[in-house]
Image 1: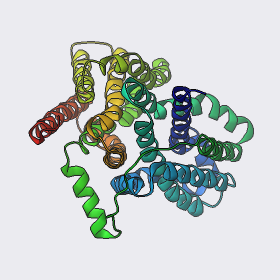
Image 2: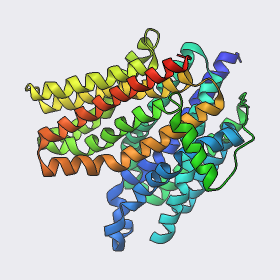
Image 3: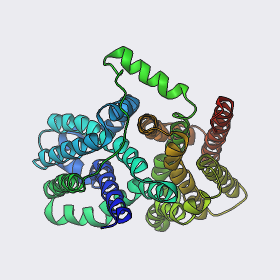
Length: 391
């Protein structure tokens, strides 16, 4: 087996690990009505079963990057997969609500381990154009996982029940871990020996991460992306005619995946990753302007999510472009996990508050403003990097 084909298989296995991590969200979000039926006495707090992972990510994302650099991404990825698989098997018994919620808290740790270690590994085992293509592939893991869970998972729940659904997820997570272990994945990472534990270490990691215009740039742009992505996906279909909502909701994330696949690898041969991200934000603003000029809302929804695919693919590829060492890449992916979870937590409440307090036009103006701020922040950070003399 050639080295390039072996690397290709390893990238596919790591991407499958990402599908498992995204399913940690999707297995609650997609069959949410069935989850409610399983815990009818906890309807008022059932949403915590979904959001508690985001809370863990927002709190621990940056430190997870430091831990990745400390113990190595390969070991952390395998640990996250095995832990996640074991927790899904536990959840297959549909334990009491309190135990289920506690298991979701721990599952947040598993999720973080995977989404920080996996792209760090991809960046280490690939180079050049292959790295760009691999990062574009990685950037699709969330959307693809939700689509697969909707298309395949819901029929499994309908026929065999939630227990079988959770158990299948657990078995697949452990299976992927076994295949990655057998693939003899090796990376060259220089571990930092000066990381301590406790509050001082926690604060030091955040200062090191967010002071650096190289480490922090992908994450800060990613915050503004996630601030609108999930929230608009939840809000916009309900603003459409009833006969269009479901189909447009399915097409919106797929449009971003398709455009990311088709265009981002080509653009990255001519533009920097940050330029591709800013292009996506700029085109997002133009899509919103088109709505104010009379474009149909359904068209605007699909166009907006399509161009956000540039932000999606460019942001993950920006990490290895801006950061040369595996340690700094791990810190940057940890920051992306932290900012992404913070954006997911804040986005829907913020946009709903604007929508209900004002109107739809104000909500779209806020989204355009978020994208404009993201562009400005990226330009400021690019200026800081230029002053630093590295880019």
